[in-house]
Length: 73
Image 1 (tube, rainbow, N blue to C red):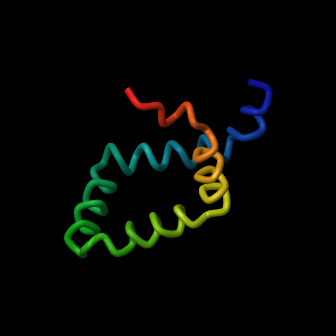
Image 2 (cartoon, helix red, strand yellow):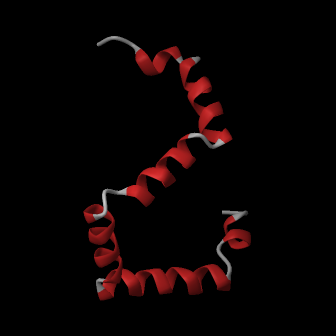
């Protein structure tokens, strides 16, 4: 609540409205369908890039240390 206003600025809201318009117009859906038809090359590259991001690498190591996450039922 104290940091949000620093992050969600007028510029951020403006960009979010553009993205909403892309969704509402169907532009995003067309782009996603084209991505699927082309074999998801961009999507898979972005997913790989995000998986290898330092915060994800550290997060995976931290989760390994959290034994309570993996308790057997």
